[in-house]
Length: 114
Image 1: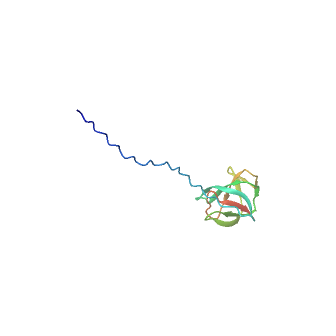
Image 2: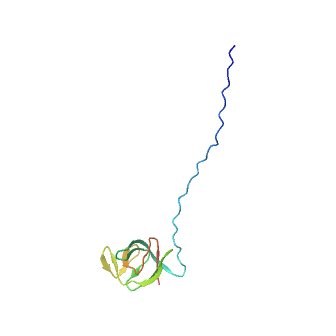
Image 3: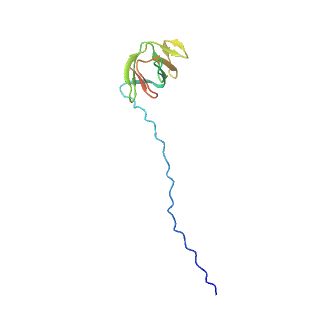
């Protein structure tokens, strides 16, 4: 007579559930309610100290602006501005303008008209 051995059952390992990782959201500075937001900084050129601003409202040479972000906060007048390397005196909503800035600005900084 032949005796069959029973196979030992393997201990079940606990199944790890997949955890969905969520991407960190970039924090955007909140607009101050008393000031008029006219645009957002999209680029900065440190060698010439110039910034590119995407306008959400009209802006003219001579206007006083405030640039504010997490580490940025200063005021300055607009002495000159350019669109596609051509000097202009005013720019409409939707235009991307280049201006000289007196301090470093960062992408996402808000531009207020004073």
